[in-house]
Image (cartoon, rainbow, N blue to C red; front, side, top):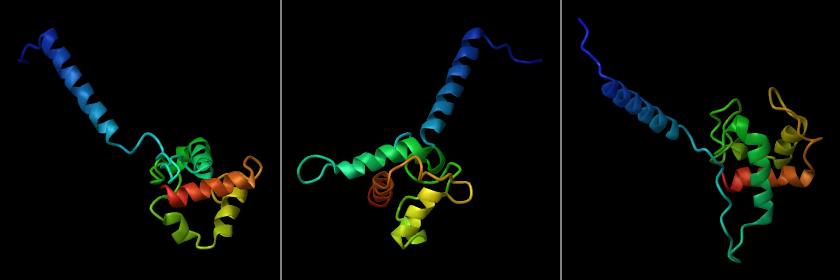
Length: 125
């Protein structure tokens, strides 16, 4: 009634399914936030490096590693932050005080760290 499946065929099918699953998973967004490019002096801007670190630690789990917003938070990359918050002080207020589902980071981050992460989002993402 059913064709006989040998152990070897079963293993080959399982490996093919695993390979397909891994290929699909690899294509689903980036797994790390973009690095800060080196400047004219041959070193990356230290403020942007700090901003990347803050973004990776505090923001990427909701806004995704590349800022695309595929997590719980909205998209921040490709200039979206500036479109929504033309006044930089408004963006600082959201990060500091929180809004909707976004927690307040004012007690966890310094103003310099908040400024750095906003620069990273605007200039790198």
